[in-house]
Length: 323
Image (cartoon, rainbow, N blue to C red; front, side):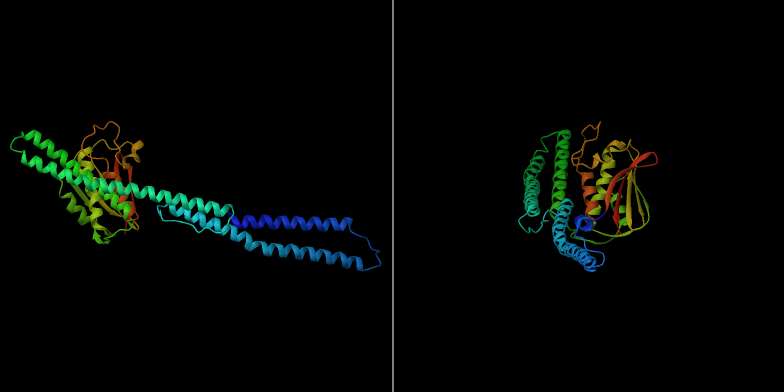
């Protein structure tokens, strides 16, 4: 596909060529006539043709930098739009001139600034709200401890379970806010993915691990959270045992997790990664609906991906992390 400035320039050159041909044809058929015995007529006619062609060539040469300047500004605007779409909320373009392209660049900068402010306010609200929830949770936990001698065991257990669920929700919202606020990983180091998976699987009685050692460069805290969230998802919504497999592809480590439950319907393979999504037929049990969203967010933060796919007759979660 031709670049925009080439299309502009070729259209201009084609117009000039057509104009020159029209002038030469008109001069040939309607120009002054000299006697055949006089060579001045042919010489004069040739001179007019040469001058006309030279003027067309000169216009084409002068027009090229003008056309290129216009298209270069549009290309910079395109790169700014692509950067904003890729998540760089600080992307702006330089405003040059006072024409329509300049007004378009100004409108883009205003829109990008507004989007950055809205997203920043949203992140700050989530972070502040999550942080402020810590204080009442601490007071509730203390109150439960003080009343444990007066409350029956069932009621106390229910309260403690609710508090633990709220605590996990606050922790996941805080982590999601930090991942959004800090675009670069802060604690990248080499780690053995299989060894890390073995540590996390040891926390669950019915988790089974297989695979080969794979060394990756990643944030161990975040990779640990990926494994823990996938194991928790299997424990809450699946049927034991939860299977974890670590393999290596050409340039990536692959984490595959599945269980013996009914699995995820293919129509919901993408939906399960949305925050606070509840699958159809869910009884609204434990879990805030942020676990799988965090898995995908962490995977993409490391340059990988998280997805749900069919392998054989079962659905499973697959996370790829670059080596």
